[in-house]
Image (cartoon, rainbow, N blue to C red; front, side, top):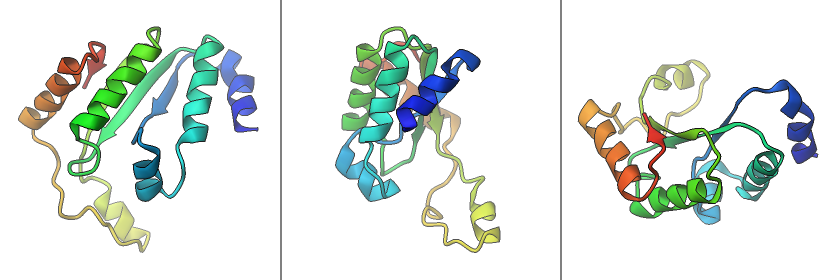
Length: 136
């Protein structure tokens, strides 16, 4: 059903902003509570249908800033060469206040917004892994 919903809105959508949090099914389940199989199947269906897609990769230190994840994203971008690019979204702590207002415990309070040098380093790591269309 979800795949068909994406395909139904394809003619009305100029660009899909498609978030890729973790490519390891096990880690995706651990950190988000759900498997990433449906997500990856939807990406594949959109790509095969000719959708314009920008992969967006939020990077959270200690969770998905690993070489394995970066390499997996580069491989995904290689699998889908017509994507518009890979937008790296470095961690920031601007959502902490909102979590508190909503009464939720913010589990990433120990992390700080990435500095510019950290952001450039992450971008360079993506490019070195072969993800040449990566951008901040």
